[in-house]
Image 1: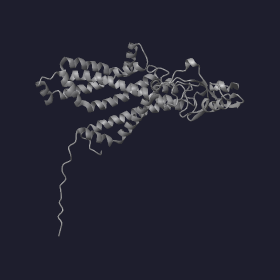
Image 2: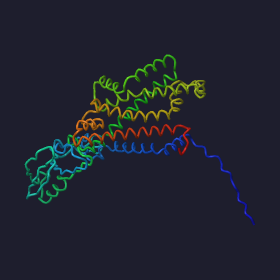
Image 3: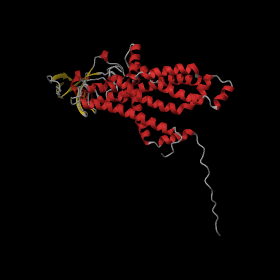
Length: 393
């Protein structure tokens, strides 16, 4: 008896929201996902802050002059003598995360040591830039910072007071750990990018929405303002704002960079508003008597999410570059804060020496990779929000 097999024609694909296709296009864009991955990694490092730094002193500014300009992979032996009681700050995990941890020791590089009886004979450190001192003798109790049996003091000295330290990316001209300052610089770069983007979005959306929706002489005045600001070089505008605020530093740089980047957002919002204000749903809102502020905030601006996200990623990269340029010129983040632009300047001053190459290359490479990542992500978002981009392309 023959069995009859039922055949079913495939039905139409399930209906999905537009956001699903945006995510799929973005996930299939490998360069964009690589850029996103590097941005997420930098964000995690910035959020962890001092918790993940080999040198968690404030601004990673614990410098040992004897160890200046050492190459990557350098290993030093450090003697840690207890600091004076009045200079030792109490430990606090949240204070360490935000500001770093004040050192509780006076650190000195040494060439070696020998324990002789109840004393420690410290051999001088010899390097390429300084003459060695004479050997010094300390008591075990003096180095350990406490009294007790000789065996216990010797254990404390050997395990806690004399340590080996590896400088994986070498040291700068002040003997500071280059890796720690490079990692902490992500907090400055991402912070200034985030604040600048938020300021530019708020100002740009406000001015662009008013200009595009109201039109008339208001549009002409605001468009003229955009044109004037657009014609001024961004770095000159930041310098003028810094002089007007009569301050140089991290927060001044944040605000100054943000106040120079709103024009891009305003022009995009204005153009989108001009095309959307004649749509049927806007006319329906006017007939229902909805106030203009609600029409703009609840019905028009949400329709510009895609273009605004794309331009925000572009502005993020531009803000990082602008901050690096300002810090390189000495007009942005001030020493000893570890800004990548400032670190490039410090390395640039040493070009021609053995240390100048990596001290310039490492922060320059960090800036380039982070800016490239934001540009790749911005290109991927632009393609993802384009409905003409096929899935799998």
